[in-house]
Image (cartoon, rainbow, N blue to C red; front, side, top):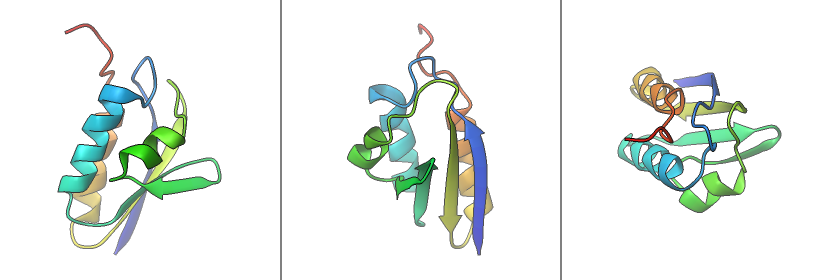
Length: 90
């Protein structure tokens, strides 16, 4: 089973350092292949260098795709993560 979601990135500085690390860690823990795409470029969501190479900024739309058992649940969790501003002061 393959599932995908289009998400608008909420972090005010985009998908950099901390938000990217949180996202990659969640993708690694998913246990199934997940990709993230911006425009025509698609990378392994479990690769910090790949995710950073996309240059995702605040308000950019990305497409997440997952394949395997529980793909919808994995994408729901990753969508929630990207839809949260992780750059707000704690």
